[in-house]
Amino acid sequence: MYAIIKTGGKQYRVSKGEKLKLEKLDAEIGKKVVFNEVLSVGEGADLKIGTPYIKDAKVEAKVLDEGKSKKIEVIKFKRRKNYKRNFGHRQHYSLVEITNISVKKASAKKKDKE
Image (cartoon, rainbow, N blue to C red; front, top):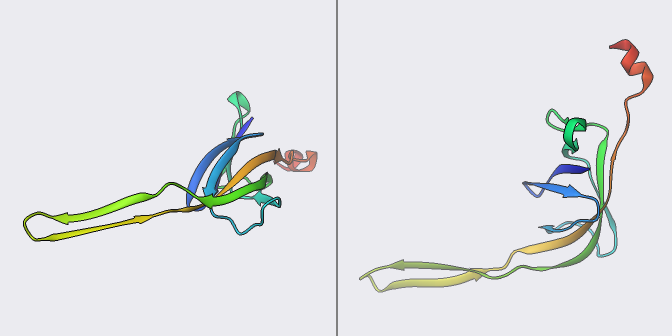
């Protein structure tokens, strides 16, 4: 089973036990993080797609590490004008491990009303 979550302005396809680097989160190392913005959950014929989010779905993760990714070099250059600028940027990230993907089942009362 997999889920598609939205965090840091990006969307990620995650499954249980997977480790991934996300935009820096406001959580300490070792703490649990819950993602409520779940776009879809399931696999195969059992796939549920939200509009835009699934109400009763959540993805839980544990923060393993924080750091900076590789340096991206930015070079500005104009030929024959004696102009050259060279600088870089290192993006902060949080390394998380997905621990649980859960979806609450619809109750029998809701099915009867429909």
